[in-house]
Image 1 (cartoon, one colour):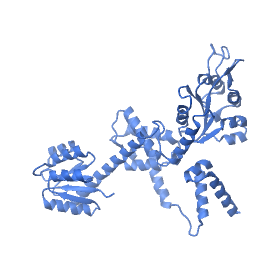
Image 2 (tube, helix red, strand yellow):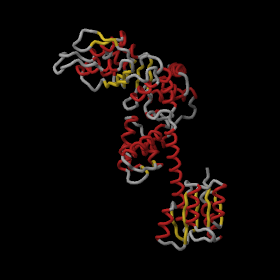
Image 3 (cartoon, one colour):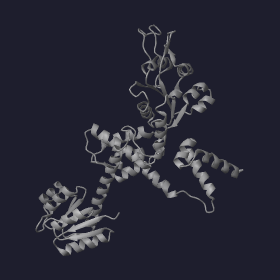
Length: 455
């Protein structure tokens, strides 16, 4: 949409000159000779920016500035004067003017001031839209509106009311624990306990005691009976994070819980019944671990009742700006800083980065930027070096384009796109199908046709 500029000056020569300058820049320009007329236009039309003289009859430029900001604070105002003083400039800036330029006017100065003012206005609007989108999110913890995330949330929403075991599969930092909490809240036992255990963070001996509890004297230091996490989670949900890191001995015990609904404390002989909904999470390829003998096949099938792929951040198209704004608001409040948002270049750099560390990497990067930012807008220079470099890499990559040789068949193009999407999804055909907007069976069919064509 072309921006609309209003020029207010009681000298016709100034009005005409500024109008010609700005119309050459492709802007829509309306002129008027008084403050009251300008206010009528502000009330009746969409005005993006006002260029106003300071010294005018009927209503001064400063009075007009105050009135405009009272009606529409988003309108940027640039003041012009032939009688500029430091006091005038300070007063205008205090009242909300974006800039203060002297007469006689120079074309370059006018154009530069107007462009910078409009850029700031666009930045403020963009960040406001991001904030509103974040606030409109249905879950205060899970931010995003991408197709990939919505598909994951839809599946979990259907599965949550049941007691079926869920296996969350995805890269580190994708938010698997947040999703597990969401499932618990959507279950038929939301008031029950929610217990999370990181199976990869403890050695086998400690993990067994942590999960299943122990009897007094079971080992050195066991001075009293202790309930394990499964007992504490009874009547609720337990998350077994990094399930792929468990040893064979722990896997045997976990299988018993899933099959029989009972545990045996370390050093004990009595069985204890537990009523627990199990959610497991992993960043490993458990199918490969089963083939290699690192993970029990029977346990895998017990866990893999409802398998949900958690998309990496690089495949959650459009979610990075929303998450970035969410983290900015959180860390700005935590550090007692007043920040308006991100510069356009910073948003582009964030969007261009591949995010190998996923949401956790983004969260850490925004916290760093908030702490180090010296102005009220986060710029590219405030971001970590790996993210700053992303914009350059993206521009370089884009320069090569997506080359398709003349004469390439549509089937060949489809096959190439499917294979590249599968590669980015780690071979997960269901996720690739969701991103491409096609059925999973279509991927199998297209890949089969491509293979036959190669033969």
